[in-house]
Length: 185
Ligand SMILES: CC(C)(COP(=O)(O)OP(=O)(O)OC[C@H]1O[C@@H](n2cnc3c(N)ncnc32)[C@H](O)[C@@H]1OP(=O)(O)O)[C@@H](O)C(=O)NCCC(=O)NCCS
Image (cartoon, rainbow, N blue to C red):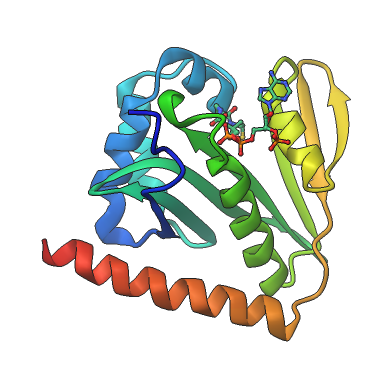
């Protein structure tokens, strides 16, 4: 199932109608991926509740769909800090789909989305032993800081440009069309 992990997918923004697929995606995560994503072991009950609150105000989620199933996702959550537009990003790729480039594609989407929302600081947190996430963050220019058991990465997106706005608008238009097609099935 891993051979086509990068080819036959489409990445799009998730809408409330995608919550059931998002919940299935989270509940398929193996123990190591859960620990790496949430920083500690989490059970299905936690993930059910997490998926239900995922679409609260100030959160943008992208999902990589293969057919009707989401296999990877990225969340951009705004952090309410007075005077600075800051956000936190988190990434989740199912085990069989890791190391195939999906995290990089999602990181690119998240950075463009942050740029277009004039977010000046984009933060990501991972466990200290999460070399793959640190490599990914570093590849996109994040400054990494080690804090006890965690590593925080910070990217300062540039200002929105006509190209970045157009890039997101094009992805959104395509994403909306595929979302409508998915729901008709
Ligand atoms: C971390 C994660 C998001 C990365 O997504 P991914 O789809 O696996 O990543 P990609 O395939 O796009 O890129 C992986 C990169 O890490 C590199 N890599 C793989 N294993 C590595 C390791 N042990 N040490 C350092 N780099 C590593 C790959 O070579 C690749 O680098 P390249 O693009 O320069 O060739 C994904 O593996 C994941 O969901 N892990 C579990 C949850 C998690 O850790 N979330 C992050 C906390 S927010």
